[in-house]
Length: 200
Image (cartoon, rainbow, N blue to C red; front, side, top):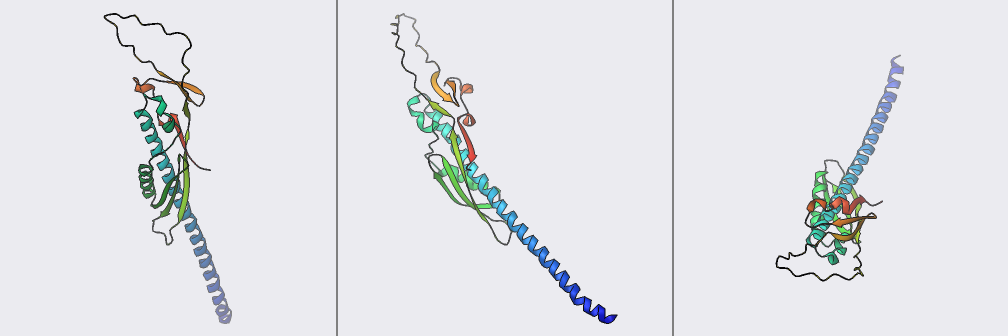
């Protein structure tokens, strides 16, 4: 009987060792997958943050030249001219997700490509990349001058300077939008002008 017990003990040890090895293997695989997912989440967040920062600055540029529609094309088409502030924003969001921003660059006129590396306590860090783009919704088409003759204004002592009306010719997603610089509540916000999304 004791001989049978002695023979079974090594088998028992081998089985336990095998189970421990499998458990460790599953743990290591799961931890690696979690680290990769964390890196990708951080990269996605950083790319979106860069594009959203650039989108907000595009609207600010548009507001600076709102009285001169001839200068609207650049901002409304999403042409980013300064990626510095956007990449700083990307670095902030990478840090919030326990990652370090390694690369942030502008591609095409209005897209951002970022690469991040996790900085957590895992044995091995992971690196991931993501791209986000800014899609314009609006365009400006200058109004054709009227062919009807303009009546000659009558001079009077109390003549008041004629006020400029809303600026017409801006179309967003197929819908016309009159811009009244004197009424900021009617101006489109950044989300009206652009969509920010991750590249497919």
